[in-house]
Length: 187
Image: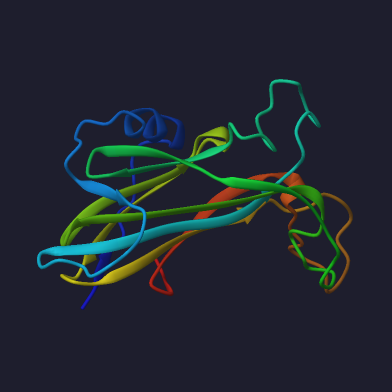
């Protein structure tokens, strides 16, 4: 069975990003191109995310949103790797008034398969461009194939609030937080 523990970090997100972006180890996980059978004593972990940002150059020429420089940072027990996303321009229609990703922007899809020893691990996932990071402790069972999904939490849209429309969010306002889901269970 899988167990998970949530720890509250004392460090701010920029400080956590700074410290976790440097690898202090290189023996924690190996990147996989395909899955295959999980050997005894190990577990597989697929890290994935799909999120949307504004197009490049909207707010400044130095803004990396909407470019290939926008990456995720993953650190497991001191071994760090930056995840490069596949990106595409997207102009999606609205799926109702509460569709946080409706409109013209850039869609990122991140996906990385890893193999690591089964057991308890400290995982840090961050979006450095948005100064966001979360730290969790997870326990992966021997022989298991696991999925860790990063979901963005978008900021609320400004404007006059109307009854029935409270809490409308949009990718255009930026990402204010990160939610992690391990094997369909929120962390």
